Image 1 (cartoon, rainbow, N blue to C red):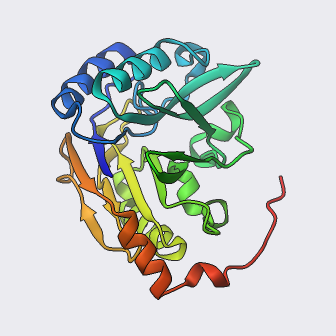
Image 2 (cartoon, one colour):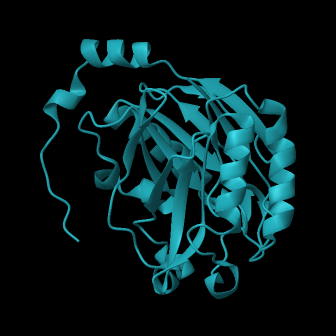
Length: 256
């Protein structure tokens, strides 16, 4: 399976300008990749202004994602602000060319940025299959909480869409590798570049990592670009058979 990351410089709170920019980055890889991963809040930046910027579940951003996935023949994913039942969610969406839809609402809201005050927390993990690959997702700050991502041979690929600041880049790099190693899975981290409307800087460090913690591909730091890497389920299966860590994992329940 081929996976592409779009490491974009998100225009602050300007949905349609971001659509235009992203289409320019994505259109050259139409029909050349299986999945395209966008950063967290790819259409607005990490804004705490959902009263102005959120959309209904099948609003303009949903329609844009659906149409682009069809045109390019890939699964398209990333998060944006959604208002549903009077609540605001930082919602990650995955849409296929066949119009199949999976959603995940961010579980761990970034307290230091006030996200937990404005948005409602998700309560369900997401695991689904696309083109033969079992996929799970989380969003940015979720990466710090390994129990939420714990793999009991339920998935093969973990995708994290993020707005992870440059000031904590080493934490991002270490935790992505840790999630890959401990869960014996491929990990994709899609992060933005540039400076947001709050003056916070981002350097990207988007990456595809294999189950041994090795980097398969990564864009240039601080640059807006797309990169594509390939993952192999055969290699993953062989590795899990030779080193069956998942057979010794602990059972647990997550309490809300």
